Every structure is written in C-alpha cells, then in structure tokens.
Length: 67
Picture 1: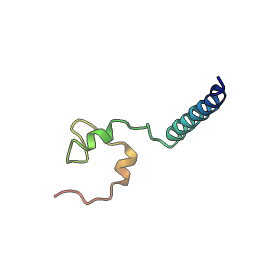
Picture 2: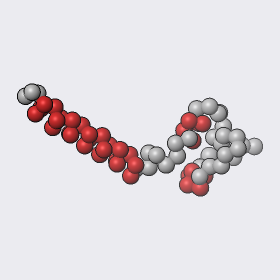
Picture 3: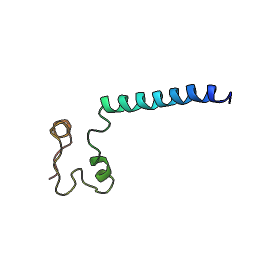
Picture 4: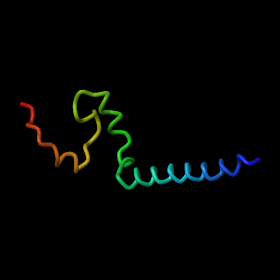
C-alpha cells in the first residue's frame, strides 16, 4: 500500500510531461501538415500528383526551374 504514495506522484509527473510535449509540438507547427511528409517519401518529384504546395513552401523554393 505504501507504493501507491510513490506511484501517484510519478504518474502525475509523467502525464504533465506528456501534455507539455504535446502543447509544445502543437505550438511549433508539428501538426500543421500531416500528409505532405508522407507523400514526400513516395514520389521523386517535390509535388505529388493532384496536390498543390502551400504558399509558404513555394515562396521558399530557390531551386532553378527544370528545362
């Protein structure tokens, strides 16, 4: 029964760390575009068929256009 006095604070700290990690990830844009990175590994081209790139990515594209 004495172990419960140790396990409850440890579980509260663990839940707090998980919530803090989730909030950090949400505020730093980790969940903004969940599907683009998954498509990036499937296609050689930067643009997957039938999709458009977000305006911010298109503005940062500094590569030379293909001839």
